[in-house]
Image (cartoon, helix red, strand yellow):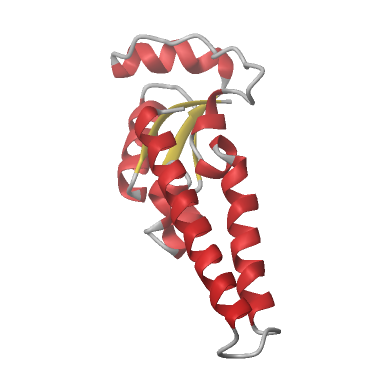
Length: 143
């Protein structure tokens, strides 16, 4: 199965499916139930997808006046979708955020008003801002 198009609304996906099936190409709509449950998920999951069989892909592109694209070759970095989600792009952010949140839980063990608690609070805040700065720079520079 190959995705021919993706939409943010279910209706648009079904209109395309009807157009393809009217031309003799069997098409399937995927992820429509997820978007129906919560329309805000459409962008998160890549939209409602219209898919056709591999052997029908060229014909579907011809019907829709698309130029067929070859299958993307998987790369060592995890394939085409590896860059979509920030946790796959920046795995260290998850570790840093986990450590920061763990630090806040450890703060509860320290007595309130003590010097060691104040130093720990400052260190956690500095670590949070450094992690945010590194994430912003990495996203800006597209690393």
